[in-house]
Length: 229
Image (spheres, one colour):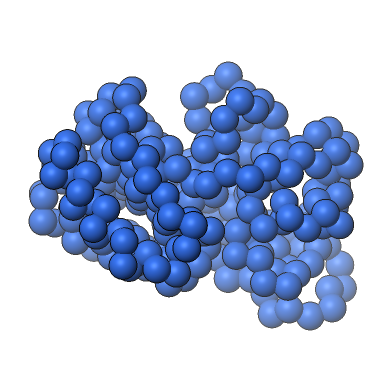
């Protein structure tokens, strides 16, 4: 099965193409605000080289509202034009899956604006895909009571660059820098496509998990919303 995967929710624009277990292409651009200028051109180049895919997998966030909408609109248009199925994937899970050579808990963050950002907690182990510990949720200053974790935790996204906040996640934070890989979006989508778990292009929507209004918190804020596995 050949799958095209792409994501524009975070700090990079990523496009990948897989066939079975093989990665045929992985492109990413560090300026996601120009996603609209590069996404279609990259897809056309990849399809010209490798042919049309059997399915499309797209990161639906949480993350940049604009980036997610651009990617999702492209995925729907391609699914209709090529008459192939489409699936929406958690962008944060795909980001955790993009980490190479690490096993353990991963705290993924996105779209940090002051004390507000999106987060997901995953576990990378012997299973082929990241396991969900806490589904993607919106953070506003305070993390749930289980934090900080006592064991080492890998942190990716903008929180990884905030040393003081990293210690609110874990007493042994491991800051990592890696992009979301389009091939990982494609592999997550491939696993669902093979099981016939496709999404309806008409109803597939961005994973909007809006954070509460930023204010002085009165207590711990529990996770809100549900993530995709």
